[in-house]
Image (tube, rainbow, N blue to C red; front, side):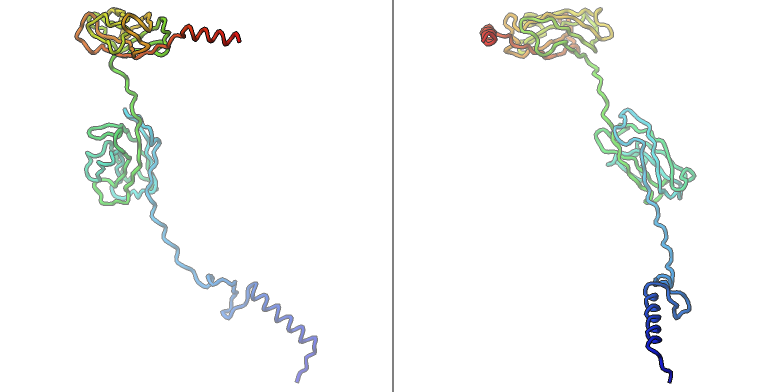
Length: 300
């Protein structure tokens, strides 16, 4: 029998411990004759996943506050298949949308298959707020895409909302402005009264200040002031005049009642298209007692 010394036993035990430590932390020789890295996944691979089909998406160069009278916008798409006969893109009032009725579309552009490269395309669309029975000023509207030529493929359907800004309404009838329409001096003030959009037909117009509840087309005495603007003085529908006004005249009182500048066709004309009403206000005069009190207060 071989006898081991105490030193030999200690040395062997140390070597075994070191080998076990390396097996936990590092590579080991496996029963399969190779290196074990400690990962079960290294024993076999999994099949790669198929890439998901791209989702069609649309962007617009401008989607809000489009000009109601018409504006050209750029419409771009990504993630489209490009299969079949391409796709249609256009503007539709949402509650009239149809994938089969072309008359529901306010505008339509056809993107051929050749126009869709790597799922991408770009088109210009002329969009206006009102067309036929469709009105995007009072109804919601969107840019839609669908697979072309009546295709049943619904994977190419998209909807991108748009909005239009209401058009600026230019007055077509006569309008009047007053240089000082509020706070006119009660004791009297000269104001400039101007008009636009007047016809200039017939004998011209009358313009003047009237207490509203005394207004009359035929009773001249109801008017606190009256100026005659002759037809020759109305150029391209425009005229301007100065009027001396005061708050109280005769039985009319603009401090206690509402008053306005009125215009009417002159010389008893039955033409009511030249009638206008422009409210004005007067500032109350400072009374003597108040002035005296103010002076006394200043002296004190």
